[in-house]
Every structure is written in structure tokens, then in C-alpha cells.
Length: 211
Image (cartoon, rainbow, N blue to C red; front, top):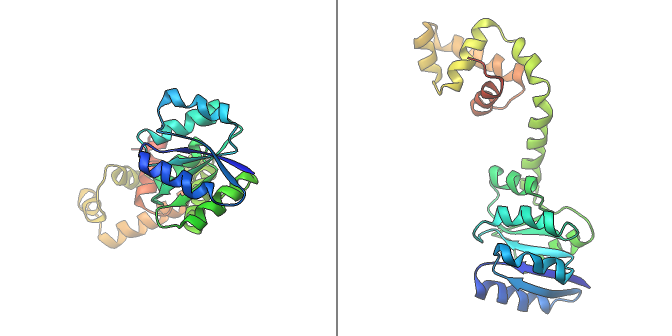
């Protein structure tokens, strides 16, 4: 029997989830709370296997972090995820074990709770791609100082202007060079840094304090 604890600051929502999940074979709901900090201790007392955290709850990411600190044995499923990369990554970094999106059904939720209780990580293919991209970016960070040094003086100059938010046309006017030349330099910069676009290149420039 999988012991489930529900966090949501909408009472009718958490009570409805508790009623539906409590009728599913293999699941038992051992508690529901609104998500306040003073209620976190109830998770440890309940000996829950899985915590279902409604991510629309106020301060949900902070609650997630505190849950991982205070009840590390309980695995957390994030409910109502919108599948944007910053959101997916933030939840992963805070310690979530599984995701259920806003578009998924009760059956998907039950499957996620069951899989997470078995120690599996659960997410959609889209979320998995986002997480893999994040891992790739972090892995590439170690090689970026060397990659930045491989940039020519002109490429470093252009990277600094990308960081400042200038478009290719604005860069061309600033440096008095033709637009195709700017595009060629930008292409080389992206390849050398191993990034996918201007926003990532600008982020790298800020990390490396290039100007």
C-alpha cells in the first residue's frame, strides 16, 4: 500500500484528490494540508511514501525544498506543472521526483505516484528533453573558459555586444561591418561556445565576464 500525502492550499481540490485517490487500489491518503510551513512536520509523522504537491500552492518551490530537508524519505510529485524549462529545472533542482502536467488525467497521476513510490523518476518526454538540455549546458560549462579563449578578438567584441542585447544589424552599425559578416561571426561564436542561440551565448558572456 502506497501512503500518499497531499499539499494544496485549495481545500476543495485537496479533499477531492484525497477522495479520488483513496478509492484507487494500492493507494491510501494519510494526510492533506494547505501547505503552511508549520504543517510540514505532519509529513514525517504520517510516514508518507509519496507527497503530492500542488505547484499552484503559494510558495510551492520553498515548500518542496523544506520537504526534502525535513522528510527526505518521502518522494515528491509536482502536480499541475506547465512544462516550461525554467519551471521544470527549478523543481528538479529543488528535489522533485516526478511531474504531472496540467493536461494529464487521474490515471496518469496514479501511474506517477506508483512509479515514484517504486523509486522511478517520472516526467513527460518534453520535460525529459528540458532536463537533458540543462545537464548538457552544465556539463559544457567546464569547457567554456577554454572555448572563450579560442574566440578571436572580433568574436569576443561581438559576444560582448550580444550580451548587451544588440541585434545583428545594430552590431554591424556599431562595428561598421556588413550584416552577413556579423552573422558569420555569430555562427562561429555559437559553435565555439557550444550553445544553441543568442540568449545562451549572452548568459555565457555574463558568466565569463567578457566584454
